[in-house]
Length: 226
Ligand code: SAM
Image (cartoon, rainbow, N blue to C red):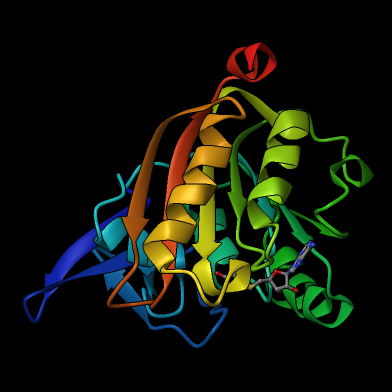
């Protein structure tokens, strides 16, 4: 069964994910039946991953059965859709530093979904969460000035060889005075110097201003050579 659906509605692409816990919503999103099966509307104005897919990121960048390390889950809007996509055979390891936000994430997302493992932790210290083996994907959306360094440190420890990094670059978190395209170029350079290849940048306008999602593949061998 398709875990992500893209349907044309009113001339626009709309995204839906197969609801892992039928009848339950996370952020008051719409529930719809498609061929008798329940899907959740995935709002590109609320989720940068949805915005990136609508703007051209390959739809199956995260697949059924994947293990995903998610840094900066917040209350779980995007994380819950990834949990739908990876399904019961997958695992989403969610890291969030704010206790208040993490509590909401646990109540709304981790408790009802058996494929979610939450950690209340600072992603700047990746050795503080472990015990889940190497992951297929690292998704990083911490909105910090050192977000790229945080992503790289986590990939070095937790991402498998050939695994994928999805890094949300909030350009204004890094430098409010610099042109967003210059900020993105600098972050891409840091990745290419740290063992990441096949790097592509997806801008998120009109859904999200001054944000981009940077997609790349990790090679530990390249990292140790540089
Ligand atoms: N990814 C979320 C979504 O799409 O639903 C939104 C994430 S929000 C922009 C950034 C989150 O990262 C906040 O909840 C913040 O508390 C968290 N965060 C910031 N610094 C962090 C750190 N060092 N470690 C873990 N989480 C962090």
